[in-house]
Length: 305
Image (cartoon, helix red, strand yellow):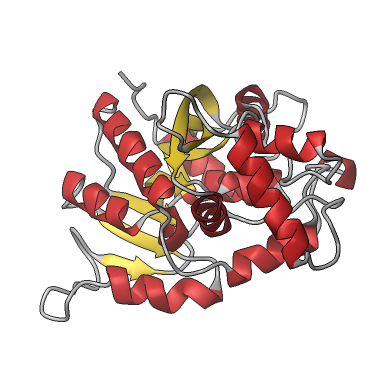
């Protein structure tokens, strides 16, 4: 498949092969931090007056199954399209999110379906904690834009560049390769949204600090959250001696004086929100407009409040 951008536009510190492998093989669970971020993002929907008639939950198993219930409660009459893009987790999504057989509906208000949304099918697309592990983020954002109806909106979250700053400092101090790929700044995400045809992007961030009783518990949490996709990551297996040195380094460098000896680690959370506007028609002597775009233009949609 061809993309309109060059390979040099792809994230320089994400190995595409490693990213694809992680996406396919990541455990079918919703990490606690993902659920917490989704809960905070769900509260932001109170700012939006218009409820969607249909919405898509993009990769819900990793993004937050508990959050899915919050969204269904907020929009009980909206059709829901569950798009789990990893075959490894599709069965988990169906088991967790398909309604009981006596409540199942194939169409109409509140119906649940599984698979990729059609072009312009949904008025809201929800993608929690997905974008920062994507090797081709422009292509993913473009897919979200295609799925949305005119005046539909995107809600997403991801890690920002200050995530794991304490861990990165430990690795740098010991001369070890980076522990993770670099995370994109929220302003760059805003630029990519505009490039993809979104309008009125609103980007903001917050920092969350998690505390861990032991280095081993901290490392377990990091393994659940993601994988090191950096092309220059250590290529071989680490031994027990290195693992012991890592735990000792973490215990010494991450101990927070006000956390009773627990180890503190920072996470920057980026939230993004944008609308899909009425498509623009290029002004020229001869202009070509797709049939779908012409239909949207002829609908004469009222401006949003």
